[in-house]
Length: 120
Image (cartoon, rainbow, N blue to C red; front, side, top):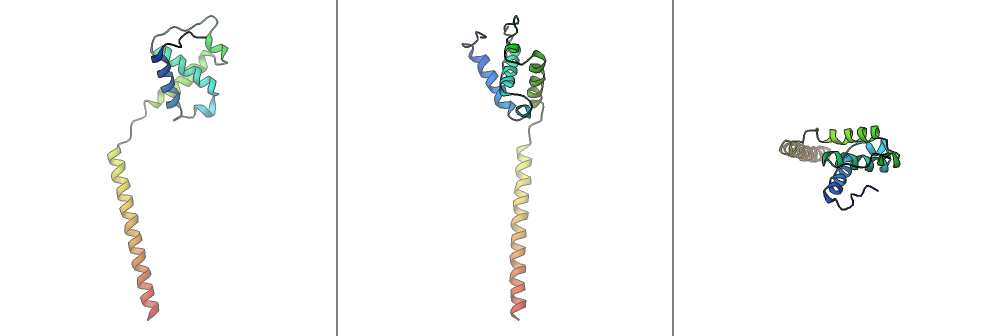
C-alpha cells in the first residue's frame, strides 16, 4: 500500500518506535493498528519520506492524522525521560540488601537470647 517495503531504514525505525511504545500507555488507549500506523507516520516524517496523501493512507487504517500526531507525541516523550543513574541505584540496592541482612542477624540473635532466657 505504501510502496516502502524495501526501505529497511524506515521499517526498522518504525519497529523501534513500536517496541519503545510498549514503555508507555498507548496500548491501553489505542488499537495496535493505530499505533503501528503512527509509528510508520513518525518514521516517515523523521526520514523525510513522502507517503500517499490522496487518499491519506492512514485514514484507510482508521487512524486520522491527528491521532498519528497524538500517538507520536506520546512515543517521542519517552525519549525526554532522563535515564536512571545506574551506579546510584546499585548503591541504594546494596545498602538495602545490607540492611536486610543485618536485620536478619539481629532477629536471629534475639531468638537465641529468648531461648536462653526461657531455658533458665
